[in-house]
Image 1 (spheres, rainbow, N blue to C red):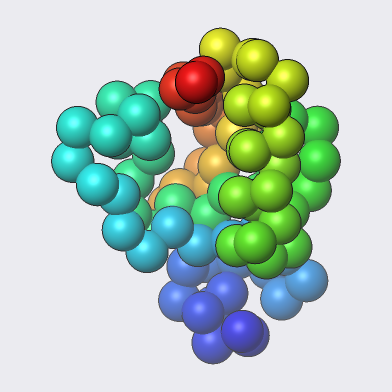
Image 2 (cartoon, helix red, strand yellow):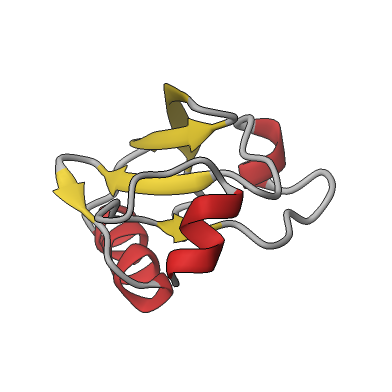
Length: 88
């Protein structure tokens, strides 16, 4: 929403999804993902909804990738994080 973008210091037309919670000791936590992060891209793909982000992460798991890069915005700075994946 525009209010959420403003609170997070994002431009009004910014894409991405806000991480509301990270489970302690999870692969996301161990990969450096924090609550309040805005995931802008999963791999090379822009994400526009939580379901979109989950689908792209699951696709990487299905492709047997060990990790997928996340472009994350945190406190006005953009980072790349390598999200470690669990393959079954």
